[in-house]
Amino acid sequence: MPERLVKIASTSGLHARPAAIFSQAASEQPVAVTIEKSGGAPIRASSILMLLTLNADHDDEVILRAEGDGADAALDALAALLERNLDEDF
Image (cartoon, rainbow, N blue to C red):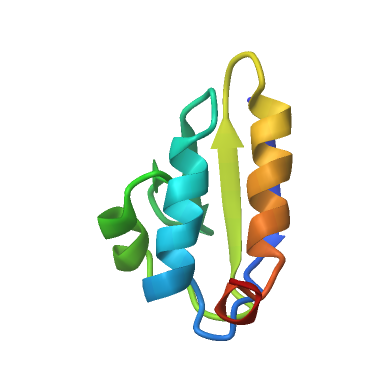
């Protein structure tokens, strides 16, 4: 199963606006994507409520995983999004 280790660049972490932007992008992917912090349980990346419970802060590392046709492209797109400061870019 493809995966990406990504450091969160948003100054507020994956909270509020960045979480909304990320969950929307995840829901538009052709495959289901999960996100987790090291040692934590995977959650659906498309669920804003689940993202808010992740407590992912600025500079935290998360793991993105997906399976199926288009998984690598989906992970690349979502990893690139997390590597941007979504607080300032949108």
